[in-house]
Image 1 (cartoon, one colour):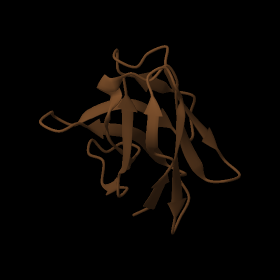
Image 2 (cartoon, one colour):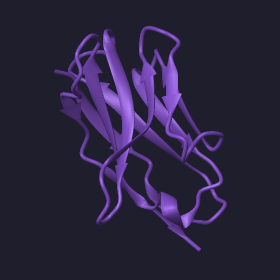
Image 3 (cartoon, one colour):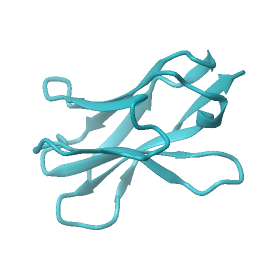
Length: 119
């Protein structure tokens, strides 16, 4: 399994931006589908964005479309989540996760990074 290391969370004012990073270690993301999830207190975990490492597919939750962008850097073996126009409702712990192409469940998870948006 690929191991994931996240970074980039923090505290930002409403309307601000943050970029989260998810770096793979132990192996590359080749053959994987990578997603960013978030979970706020008292709420269910939500898949906010996902990307195919080998293909061109990207998907976003309706709640973040037009504000968040998921991207990949082959040289750095890293997936990013650029978050713009952040709102207090975006406050959550953000996790990156990876699943092998062709499987249904995300089997590798990062440790999570806190994103807090103040009003």
